[in-house]
Image (cartoon, rainbow, N blue to C red; front, side):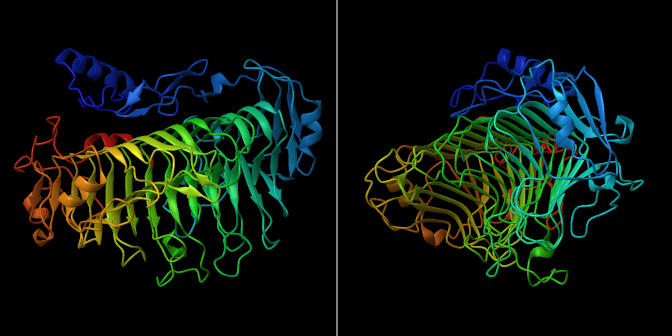
Length: 598
């Protein structure tokens, strides 16, 4: 039993747990292993079960329970025939009613109205297909249920019989195939195909939320653009609260490079609002977006979204969008990264599979970006754990960034641990080959601080450019502080650790010099550094320099798609972590956390 299983937050960043505590943790882990995966951290009545902290980061304090039992619709059932306007039925509906749209039917865009509903009287809008014709609750829907056996360039999905069981809502142009009116509350959407008409120009959010929208669950839906058109995003969260997006499939959100009418396309975007927002659950979805698959922030607002759960999603960009490949579709889309957080507090990112990101536009193929942007924006208390990130041009950009209106509010308390990064390849993915960029651009506010990168395994086929690029802002004499880089297994790269030389952090290619000058205080210990160019000077004491992967003693076979990058029983680094664990990620827990995601 692994006592670091998902759900067991690190309440004390530095202390060792007693044996009694470890036994208790193991019992809790057994209970969690049998829990509903979609609502593992949220019980009936929206009662959170995240725990208090994970290292320096506070975990979410609120949640939304998305089980069917939590969204009862005990009222009347209203049938809406294909071609009729669902909005008329919704206007007449009472709280607790179910609106049935014909399976295989076609409907035009409509608005969901505000009504005085409550937790015991949700309005359900769903396909008329019976539950037996849909995936079971807590199971992801695929295009198979719309009669599509496979999608070119995407991961295969199980489709014994391709049959259309969904009701289709189609937007001709503009925005909002489905629009939630200001104040709409307590709605559940099930078994819908939400899309746009091909060849009608630029289309914005297919599902969009007005202000003060409260308690919405979108469950087992296919939300998609078209292969060639510009469709900016699947869902725009707007001014919403308590929203669950679960078990759904998002595809074909992209903006055309150079000649296109839009810039950034995402499957889901939120965190840009002037009214209070937050409590978002994004669990067990396939998320496909060219610029960012999922992003919070990035546009004007005044509110910081809080309590965000991002778990068990497959974030994927088709490699057929990458020019130079034999299967290239012939149209370049603007690509940036897989997950970006520019605004958000108490965010848990766990058990996701994130695949394929490349450069060539305004970024260099990073997988994950934590970069607060805007004077009202903050990125605080972020936990990224038990994820698989692979096939990217660079790894993670972790930065306290400035917007056009000055410093953001804060960039602090980030806990990144037990993640596996595979196949960072600058040549293959047109990137910079940088594993981590860690920098602070704040001029007045406290720079990036309380960042922990612990127990990561970075597995690459060839030499990367740099393990770490460190930078600071010349106008802020305060440097990033309380940064921990511990218990990791990482490649050194051609230039290993580099400082940009901006501000009071001197330009240096020597790890010991850079860490001492740029990070105060810091902990850089118990890391295994592979293929380090020793002429670049020493690392801080307490780290190990391994000649190559063979010297480390991995149990896997290099060059395969295996994610089993555990240490073999004969590795000389077994048990050499500062906490008594093996250095590197807890691969067993990652495998458990992502089971069934891809």
